Amino acid sequence: MRSQNVEFPINGGQAPGYLARPDYDDMKPGVVVIQEWWGVNVHIKDIANRLAEQGYVALAPDLYHGVVVSEPNDAQKAAMELDRERAMREIDAAVDYLRNQTYVNPKQIGVIGFCMGGALTLYAGAHNPNVGAVAAFYGGGTPQIEEFAHSEAAILNIVGDKDRTLLGIQALDQGLQQYSLPHELAIYPGAQHAFFNDTRPEVYKPDAAKDAWQRALTWFSKYLV
Image (cartoon, rainbow, N blue to C red):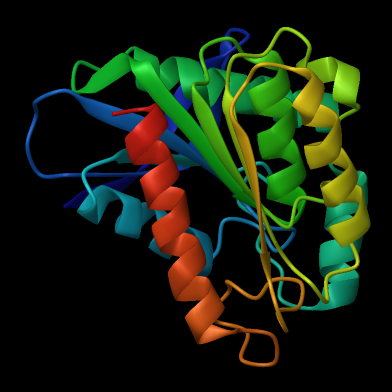
């Protein structure tokens, strides 16, 4: 596996990100990894690395441009100050960057995200025609149902039954039934918000996290590979 900090083009400028990929150059699927409200920290980089170990080229765009926080108040402030339209442009640019790499199959692009990044992942699935599948972990603040009207992406939502975002995510999954796109909702009993984050022992739920990771990999394997 290879990993490095990269910059990718956007609107005549550059945006930062973290890239991890298998150590061979034949064409592979690409996955954009969208951060939690903490920033592109050790956990997000580890997720990108784990995807690379599974044969994906993973790019985590740094939506905070170098800022990483560890206190909830700081994270809330950073998330509130984030320009969501700019963030979505950078996510779209990350998709384009992957599609333009010789070692990425441009027709096999997925997006995975967590918390704030889960919601942004769903927006990417709703609006970017180059995204074939998404896995959104506890993505509160989801798009409106009608935003998926022209989407062809396969939508996987993952959430714990003790998560405050559960009702909204259930409503989204119910609404997606009116469209022909593949969609699935996985609810984990006893799991709280951020249950996948193994750097937060107060909420981490190992069995659920292991199953959710395998479910996401299976989803990408089915709809990208």
